[in-house]
Image 1: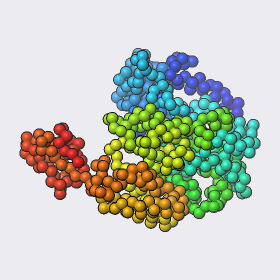
Image 2: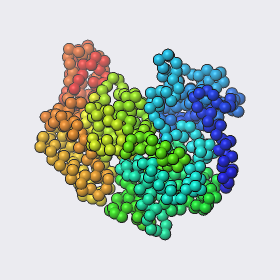
Image 3: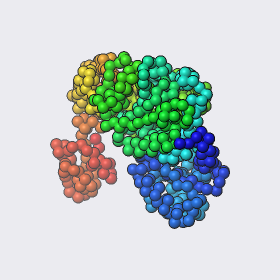
Length: 621
């Protein structure tokens, strides 16, 4: 167990080492730091092997006393991974392979010359290489929740301490009453980042005021939205930030025990949480007398099996208790009757990620960011048709255009932006005409979408919006727990109607029936999954009704829906190269060399391989 004085000594000793991880080249020591992304995305690209190779090569070069090799969390720019950054000069290496390690060690770490072919080469007007924070991807961001991701070793508690770790908890317990902590969270304007955007301070207040001989603090780390990885990345890159925030919450609401419910499909996050909790117990931070300040608090992990519905807080509670993961009727709300029937505070990972900074810097500091009703920043997982896919954190109120064009780099290959899906499978699609919409809770609700947990998927002109709506509805139908009829049956009927549209079998009257059914499901479903499941259909009907009508007339404008697509070969363009025939998986194309080929529509499975392989563009829909 460490005393407060010993913890402060660790902070002071480690601060200079962590502070040297900057781009200015003005480090306080001559020691270099080589940071390797250890997030899930880069790990799948062999970043762990890169990390091990770096340690081996640095030792072989005899410079291990001059170089620290650190496995960090996600840097954010996932489409450029694996990423390696060398400080203090800030060389930002992308698409690094294990075989590149020799050049990084020999040329850069030993020779002092960065490996140019690996650099994220973005230059300013004078032709000079931009610093990392000045690049298009980073310059519009404000990293509060992600402040330590890609900076510290998440498996080393001392590095978290160097970034003022556990000072917020110390301040809360020694300088503030539980009610003062809650008042500070209220004053900050922080709203829940899990989807609904309810006032975090009010949720804490309700749990504080609830009567009970025992209370719990829970963390929702289930994160089941397709394409979403915000919570996972925070747990992988800065697990102590969530632990400390839960300790503060426990002090504020009167809870001595916390539960982190995390999906088992996040093995790196689970592993680093286990390490962080063990380190916190070893240091006396978690336990019967946390930090020696008289507050008892400890944590445990509960692993989820991947059911999307368990992201709903009451379904999560059932699952955490070992029951079937399905929602409970509300009221009573978890703040009154939650885990094992006791008052329970539930927030998601990103919400907790803001807490320590609010306590350390004050509510006014946090409230100065964002908009009047949506304070602070928001983390988004950018996916889909973008040049820069990854994890970003922007102030609330940032226009969608900034996210897509500046940070995301726009759609690849010169394609036009068509729509953005926010809020996961239960969110809505924002059309290109609304690209200048400031992103916050109220603006998104006003245009038929929602913030959700932070997934943001971009579509271009090649996407069919009817097919997109069908994709998300298929997901929610599959993930419905089946407890209530409007969701279990209503969404299935809605999907059947949508399937008719994609096959060209629906009528204009069917579109009106679909819209009516959407509103019925929203109004009568038990939980948030069912209540929001029709959003993709409603928003695409609202903004892309012309595409629905075209399908009813037997045409898919984007050429995506197979039932409405047929391929043909232009005999005037075909040179008889036989490439299409050789690549057709079902032998639907025939012809002789140097003669126009013929496509048998009855055999064609409409896979599109022939069109993609034709060197002359002779095959079209």
